[in-house]
Amino acid sequence: MNVLQLVWLVPFFPLVGFLINGLLRKQLSKPLISIIGSGMVLASFLVSVLLFTEVKNGNTHVANLFDFISYGSLSIPFAFQIDQLSSLFLLIITGIGFLIHVYSAAYMHEEREEHYGRYFAYLNLFVFSMLLLVLGANYVIMFIGWEGVGLCSYLLIGYWFKNTEYNNAAKKAFIMNRIGDLGFLIAIFWLIAKLGTVTYTTAEGTGVFDLFTKLTPVDITGITILLFVGACGKSAQIPLYTWLPDAMAGPTPVSALIHAATMVTAGIYMIARSNILYTLAPTTQSLVAAIGLATALFAATIAIKQNDIKKVLAYSTVSQLGYMFLGLGVGAYTGAVFHVMTHAFFKALLFLGAGSVIHAMHHEQDIRKMGGLSKKLPITHATFLIGCIAIAGIPPFSGFFSKDEILAFAYAKDPIYFYLGVAGAMMTAFYMFRLYATTFRGSFRGTEEQKHHLHESPAAMTIPLIVLAILAAAGGFLGTPEVLNIGGHKLEHFLEPIFAKSNEIKMAALPEHHTEINLMMISVGLALIAVIFAWFRYSKKPEVHEPAGFGKVLADKWYIDELYGYAVVKPMNWLAKFLNNIFERRIIDWIVNGVGRAVSYSSRQVRLLQSGLVGNYVLLMVLSMLALFVVTFFLKK
Image (cartoon, rainbow, N blue to C red):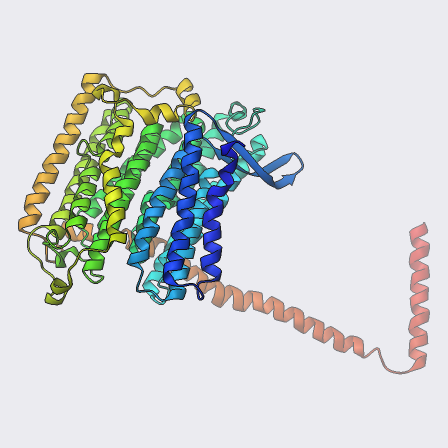
């Protein structure tokens, strides 16, 4: 039997874990719940490894499970597609997801059994939805998974549902994602109207990526912009990014799952999967690059003055996603996917490291009340430092290779993209080492009780940190640039079939070797300056006071949430109150009540005809017969 036919098992295992832990959460013990939840994701990972070995040999497969929608000439099967791109994402989702499940077993141990089971059920459902998204062989199956991760984000962000602020954060994520989802949905309808299919590609050449020549430039630009609107919602780009920092309301492992391996990478995957359409839409590509770069810079400025350890990492995620979109916009599709992979390694590491710090500090998240934790948390400290070096883009750690590739293509497209990208990278290095130095260097600034209880996290939390630290340190060697001549870009060769059509139409060219070396030296040199300055500045004199002046503007996130509140939320609330108090009560209710009164009045008048006099009944019968005769007579004429 062909191993690729087992692709349906990958999402099946997490779905089973969701059902078992969800339905039996009150009956199962905590150890059994964690074993089931983690074991099902591990099983998916092992199957994904088998599938990857087959795909690596050049084999791909589309598994049609059953007919999903069939209407006239439109046929949308429930089908999974396993190829180079989907297999890579399977490894990221299930591999990182498994480590987060193992970590969660210890991090959430204080929860009651039924809540513990609910938590793992939601995690499994999240992984299932993301797997459905990347495995779908058409845009409709992708959209089902797309909606699934949106639902799971709502459930997990609002996991502690008795806290009103957390519920508001969950609703905010759900609603802002719905805005983007509408764009995605309209794009699907547009494809159906123009091509009669939403399947990516078929052996008969009847898929979207086979028939793209039938689309006009206006069609391609419109469809790609609408798909990008969906990606902006899911992957938190301007203007739909404000839900992601608020998503920190959920448990820390959930933050790692949302920010590293699953939800926020969905938009990158969708555009990478649709690369041929974007290559044919230069206007959309320019828009993607501009929005991505603006998001990267804007979020980086906010992260500089955040004091919540998870908020710094949240805005860091928004910024890094901006770099991925910059890569997509300048045609560096492989570089963007490469950065998705390396980002999954170091961002999962950083979030889980932050969780270890919060666990040791008894749920304290303000870095101004930390300091000097390196001695008490040696494993957390060492692994967190590796994550910081990786995200700062310092060679030979993973973030350097993926970010350098995006910046090199950005330079080839327009040097201004490169210089602005380097400015964002410099800010990234600065705020990450401000976070590191304030948290781990200097002296402890917490309470005596916190100091007394400081301890390293258990093995279930530190082992995933060690594994992720190794990946964050060495993962970049899968995509070393040719100019360095240290192994070649294995990932580029692996993904070549996915981006072959785009490369045939418009091959994105890298700068000459000596120019590329100079660009590397510029980006790494500036990042090192930022690292050294932040290290020594905040190790000796951390910011322990409330920010003031322009720093307060950054700390308050440029007041964008307040702006949205005045420009969108308040007008919508006013409109809702108007519709409820005026339109609903004075117009709709008047019409409905008027119909009721009219029927009641009519019935009272008709009732008068029932007088009980036989003569009246005979008269009415004769008159009715006469009227019928007259009508029939004139109709015949």
